[in-house]
Image (tube, rainbow, N blue to C red; front, side):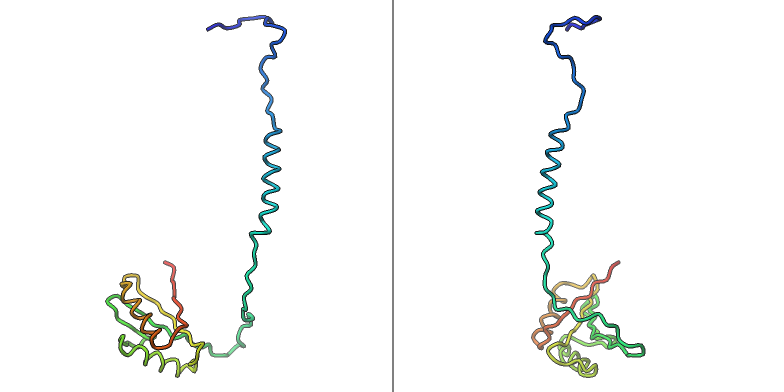
Length: 145
């Protein structure tokens, strides 16, 4: 291996080292990405039409109806609110609760909250029993830790 120690030397075609950064390819790539994003962003903002009710709060002093809540505890113990029930009497008890709350009808919604240790089979047994009893508006409650 040889090294040049001093002097200009070299041939007349020797260009030497060029340490400038060529930014032209970088600018080209950035312009292409800009165009791609400008075209794809409007396509990504697809709107879904929803028929949402207006967000009007109830007047002060109005009593808000408590939802019909089914709690499933470890071991399969069922509660509607604070009242214990069983899987055999679940549909009748839910019907009675909804009748007392004056919410009976096709829009009657039932909420289910289950302990994290509840077996999936017990949970699905409650869901199937409700559907067999005609309750199709079932909502699941999720609580953050």
